[in-house]
Length: 205
Image 1 (spheres, rainbow, N blue to C red):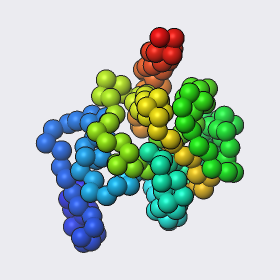
Image 2: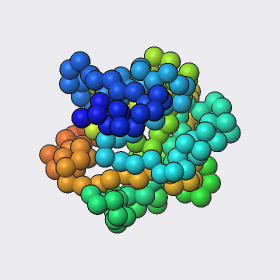
Image 3: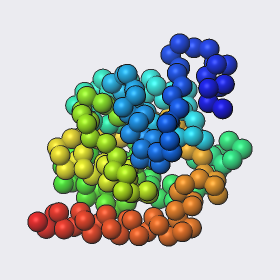
C-alpha cells in the first residue's frame, strides 16, 4: 500500500495520509490541496509520471508569472507499459491550443472562450498556487468536467492561468482509467452539455 511505498522512500519530504473514507475524485483533489503545506501544489494522478524537468519548469513558470493562479504544461502520452503512444484526442489538444511553442496566458472572457472551444489543458499537469486559490476548490457535483468547471470559475473571477510550452509530464492512457470509463458510459458528454448550458446562461445573464 501507500504507507509501505513511503517507508521505502524514507525521505522526510514524503508523507502518507490515508483518507478516512472514500472521497471520490473531487474530494481527493480537494483534500490534496488542503493538506499541502507548500504554496505550489500539483495533484499527480495515480498512474502518471512527472518528467525530470517538471519541478524546475513549474518553479520557473511561477517566478515568471507571479499572479497566475495555476500553471500547466504539455504532456507526452504513454500506454500501460510506459512507451509513448499516439492519441488522437490529445493530438487535437495541440491543434486547438493557442500555442504549443510559447507561453499561453488565459484570462477573462477570452480565456474562457478559448477553453470552451475545446479544453486543451491536460488537467493533471496543472500546478496550483494555493495563495491565489484561497478557499476555492473542485465541485464534487461533477465527475468528468470538474477541471473545466474549476478553470472557468477561476477565469470568471479574474484569475489568470498560464500554459508553459515545455513537455514535463507523462499521461498514461489505458482502458481502465476514469476518462475511458466516462467516455464509454457517455457520462462525459452529459456533463459537458450541462456545463456549457450553465456557462451560456451565466454569460447571457
